[in-house]
Length: 385
Image (cartoon, rainbow, N blue to C red; front, side, top):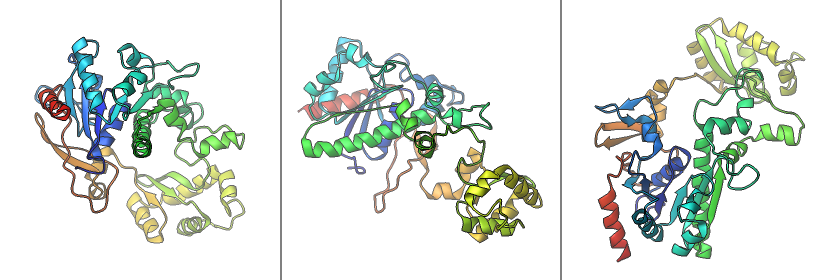
């Protein structure tokens, strides 16, 4: 066994990002993940770039991000031979992941009822754009569309008049995370019932599910939150501030932290405008102006050192090259090295979970299209015997 899911087999019929990310998370936990791709081109994300890598500049770094710890087999799901192979794989799998548009899997001959006829213990993860039912359940979903439809873009950006998408494909990634979380819960439930079930999530559900206090601002407070740039929607001072050589972030989430910041910047903490968070937030623009006037006296390094000494949460705004060079990132296992058959040793963003006392996990590189066909067929024949 490798990891807590070392005895679990995942049949990954998904493509692009949400489904593959869920499958990769399960692979990071030790599951055997068999990625099914169309023989002509494979997962569409194999063509997404730039950047591309390799001697022929044909290996998508996008694909590399979501497909470590998997085997790839090339199968035409519309062919009779392909469907027979999928039936065999379903019988030997614990989990099936798909993110087709609603109804596509049914038309391929694999509605949920058929899947559970083949394997009553199968856990099915279905990820859609806007849900599998409801008045708009059949809509196709891509990340940026979902960010807009689920309200996230209205919360992001410098002002209500300039909505921004989140830089990462956060709707896809959250759907993958929620999906993997649901799969693990369903596998646990299977231990009690002996039966698999269907886990459903969507890009809409994933984004709406992390509205948190923005959601209750409307549902309970009756206020529609809007984009506020780089400052918190409820806490002040909490955000990005200019200093002599750029920007830094300061988060004074309570009055004790605020008084430390105020003393450092020579601002009266007992000023009636700033005595409590409610008052500070009501006068936030004025407070930001006073703080930035004081911060302009020194550079970022000076202020970060001073704030660290006071125990006030603060930080730099790093570019990704700085993040992956940062020793703290590496110390947490957030960068892993794999030996790619074409690229050689490469580094990939690592899994966000660590298990104390677990044996070191050797990650495998994202596969070439169909590279594991013979190995998977041999494994399948052995399982069937």
